[in-house]
Each structure stands twice: as C-alpha cells, then as structure tokens.
Image (cartoon, rainbow, N blue to C red; front, side, top):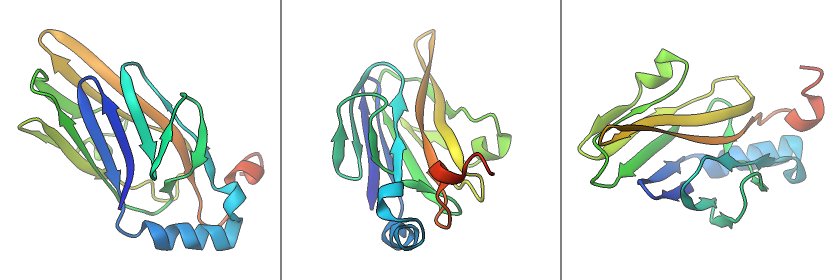
Amino acid sequence: MDLLTIRHQDFTMYVECTKFDGIWNKAKRNVGEKNLMSAYTWSEDVESVDVNGRQLVTCGEQAPAIFFDNTDYPIWVEFKKHVDHAQFGSELQNDNDRFSFRGHTLAGYINYGNDIGKSELNFVYQVGTDKRRFTFGYEVLSTKLNYHEHWKKI
C-alpha cells in the first residue's frame, strides 16, 4: 500500500507498507484514532506531498500518521535523468547500509524498532557539481501508547 508520495523537481519518492492496515487498526484500538496524527515538514522545491491519499498543501500540516514503531517501510526514490548520484543520509550507518543507488533509483527500507518521536528521512544527491540534500520530517508513533500525551513521561 502506497502511504507517501513526494513529487519534487529532481525526483519522485514513494514509501509503502504492506501491513499498514493491521498496524493502523492496532494503534487505533490502543491509542484512539484522534491521537494518530503527525505534522509533516519538507525542504524546498517540493511540488506535492500525498500522505495516505491526502494531498498536503502546506509544510507543517497535520495529517494521519503513517510511520509506526517496529514496522518495515520500503522506500523508492526515482530521480530524474539530470541526477548523477544519490545516497541515503542518515546519521546511523546501519540505516544507510540498507539503501543502494542503481540507475536513477535509490531504494531501501527503514524500521524504527522501538524508537518513537520526531524523525526525518534524509538523502543527498548530486546534480552536476552541485550537491543537494532533501529532508522530510514527521513523527514515528507507537501502536501501544499515546506519544503526544505521554512524551514528557517517557
């Protein structure tokens, strides 16, 4: 199931999750649907952001959460022909090792384990001699507890 599509001047990024409906329903039962919201932010030159079928108009807008703990999220970034090289840009080498760039596609997956809270997808790519960085921010929620209400206690 496609959860996220970002159209950018240099690429289109897709994030999916085959087990999302089950994860969403579990979180909804445990936490309540009204608590399953996330703010989404992104860097420049984005043409559109679709979160689970809903097009976000402004950066920072709230929408239903798509990232949860202990879940695999395959990611494909299809770059336009003018992009020469790309790599996943996590601070954690283990995350970077799960991605590879072939042709004009950067592909891999992320899984946050039990790490919840604010997070970002980052990747770096090259157009000619210009090195560019893209950042997409969101919250990773728990399927078992209300992160927004209990974060101070955590």
